[in-house]
Amino acid sequence: QVQLVEVGGGSVQAGGSLRLSCLVSGNTAQTACVAWFRQVPGKGREGVAVITTTGGATTYANSVKGRFTISQVNAENTVYLQMNSLKPEDTAMYSCAAARTCPSWWYADGLYKYWGQGTQVTVAS
Image (cartoon, rainbow, N blue to C red; front, side, top):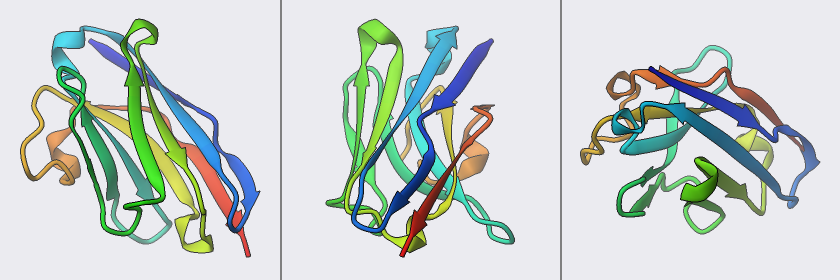
């Protein structure tokens, strides 16, 4: 079993920064791939960034490339999402998710068995 807990959402002005944390516990054999997704009401989840916890490889959605950074601290069992130069269109519920593998189609939410409860990010213009 795996548990994911997100910490760090909130409200910020456009151009500001926030850092989200995803605390991962449980069977780490099931968490080789940890991703951040976001969702706004009425739309499907959007894969934002992913990291392979075994090797540290990262991939980003085009919408956040150059502004967001996903990283991990293995000793803390935590995956971070540093979000800079935030825009109003980044406003969403952000969730982290874990899967056993990280294929090229990492952005498909059906890949992920484990999800956190989500944390709201609101960017004011």
